[in-house]
Image (spheres, rainbow, N blue to C red):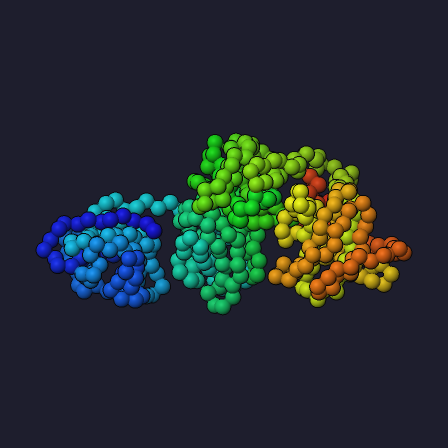
Amino acid sequence: MAGALALGTLTASADPVLYINNQCGYEATAIYMWGDINDLGGGWPGITPSGTLEKDGVVYDKFEIPASGIGKNENIIYNNNGGGKQLSDYAITFEDTEYFLDAYPTGLTIAGGDAPVVEYVNVYVKDNTGWDNLYIYAWGSKEVLGTWPGSAPAETVTIAGEEYLKYNMEKNPGTVNLIFNNNNGTQFDGPEVSANADLYFSVTADSYEILPVPGVETHYLYIENNSNWNPLYVYAYGDAEIFGTWPGSTASETVEVDGVNYLVFPVEGTVTVNLIFNSGVSGEQYDAFAVTTDKDYYINAGVDSAEEVGGNTPVDPVDPIDPVDPELPDYYIYVDNQTGWDALHIYAWTDEYGPTFFGSWPGYTTTETTEVDNVTYLAFPVYGQGHQANLIFHNNNGSQYDAISVNMNKNYYIKAEPDKAVELDVVAVSPIAVENIAPVYYNLQGFRVNAPEKGKMYIVVKGNETSKVIF
């Protein structure tokens, strides 16, 4: 709840009276009240004005509050008479007096004060949808781009030779979720964002891509979340609060690298900051460590501490003839998938260490296949020898069961049924046909990339074949 008690001038009024100066552009207004008495004055959208009052050259709408509200703690929701727009709650304890408030798009304030200063960031979108109109709706802590369908672009701008649609969004609204839509029945979910800096996207008719700031070098914090906090917030202080004021930001997206799911936190430019990992509103936190953002960081965030875990050895990208071999799998788990599920995921865990070689929940899924003795198996690569773990097979949609325990000193062949898994004794192993294996892409630092970008160089692995290509 936002706001504070707004005391006016005591008069002979028998009941409380609330005067509100409408600076929101609402054609019709109402106030709904809840708290010690829910629906005080009536159900949604609440009380409408009984008249107006001009005071010191300002015109106020007059709302007469029932006498039963005297002495009660109430929350006021100022709205456009049920038309879909409303302000955040404003808290009041009513007495038999008059109250004067100003209503701005950012909320209710005591009348006569300075208008609230609102900071904005910009959302820039490369529009590849083919739609007549591209709207962005933001929901979560606030509808910062307006009620559905959200906002149309304010203008079209050119940045570094590229054309973008530009949208204005209130800065630091808390966490909001974006929906891209055409205001005509077609839509898809975008990312969850904390709007503490300008955002850049490339958008098609059914997908989006988060883009770096044009002309500014972007590096990333890749964080494996084993903290038990969901979501994990990262606060950074030092040269700048790069993830916003406390408690910071949640991740912009997730990626999978070598079977591990990482939260992605992009950073534009080079700064030195101290990281605090925290749970957000519940207040749990711990100091991580300091970073200088002139490189990418791969971090394991534990329950009470964090550590950097590789991903930072530079590889000379100049010579495209001499490919750099990324780490190849030590072993495979081959699964004859008879579950009937749309996708089979494997989560691997141990009592002592928690998640292991397939990363945190939901683990890993694969499209790589191989044929052995006329049976087609899903091929799950395992990096690291001798890892003992318990496997859970699931569809990442509510169906799961304990499969088997493995000691990764060999390849495993498993038949997965809808409710159980059985290890198979496969002796005669046919050679894996390279054409049946999906290519796996790595960046020049040797880390797996799920969505290669056109024009960039990658290391491509198919079976035991490795090459370096420009995608």
